[in-house]
Image 1: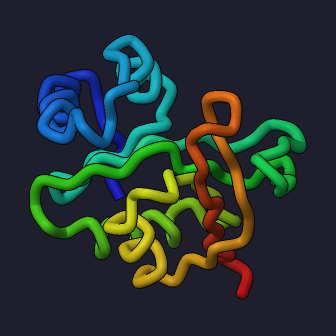
Image 2: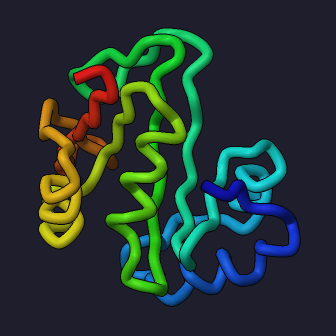
Image 3: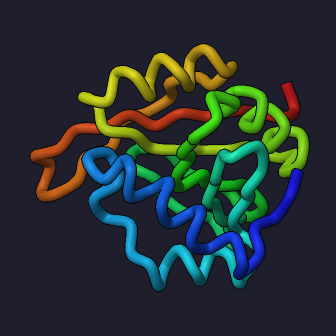
Length: 140
């Protein structure tokens, strides 16, 4: 697993911009912050942004604990997203949560295929955009 470095920024940014319909909310300053704080993986032309919680946090109708991970985004150019995600699970070695729009069936199928369980519900924009919460439990 390789953490992204500043010189990877333009490559990672272009990955997200190629999928602007899925990631319209990605800001360059936030992406750079993930890289600078060691919260961005860039491996096999796959980018993963994440955080490890410093305290207990509510995600929709689920509670994540201190030390658990939230995967914010994963985007791939190479078609190696599954391998890189599996490597990420080993690297982070804790529970990994993520949220996804209910309408993003391609992503949902990908997460299910990669041993993640649908465990909860979430919604954005005053409950007008329904979503699902997924978990990968490294301890099981």
